[in-house]
Image 1 (cartoon, rainbow, N blue to C red):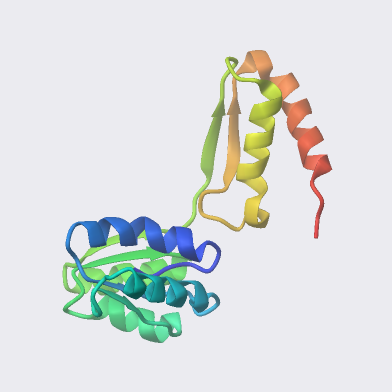
Image 2 (image 1 turned 135 degrees about the horizontal axis):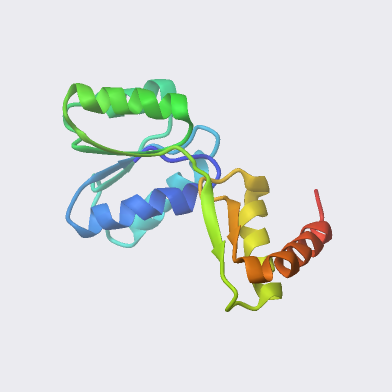
Amino acid sequence: ILSSFNHPMMIGSKSLAPALATGNSVVLKPSELTPLTSLFLGRIALDAGIPPGVLNVVPGIGSVAGARLAGHPDVGKITFTGGTAAGRAVSRAAAERFAKVTVELGGKTPVLVFDDVDVEEAAKGVAFGAFVAAGQTCICGNRLLVQRSIHDAFVEALVAVARSIRIG
């Protein structure tokens, strides 16, 4: 698992948990910008009784440690979350040896808002999804599809929420 900087626990865990639950050993390479969260998670796993060697946390620079993991013949599945250029390199390394690979390279997450919602509450939820972590998240809700009948009221509510956000 090659994890990103912006949500090191969430991004790492979403692939880690199912891999461990299905009996696999895992190598977790956190972003070089946020290695401590994953190292702490590795310590918690050992303390919880997960045997040594089942969850392996390997900090390092992505272009070195990440590249070696992506190309290693004993790694059967690679999960990568990060930028497009690195995702392309990971995908190529996996393709060279026909390894399975999942890449999350960010997206333009659409948010659908229908007329059966509480407009004020929906605006708060949409604002959180769009602005959490200053929008630096692969699940950032940055495309809105709002049912026409509530469009104006929703936009007004969303603008009010956005204006109330404290920056800094």
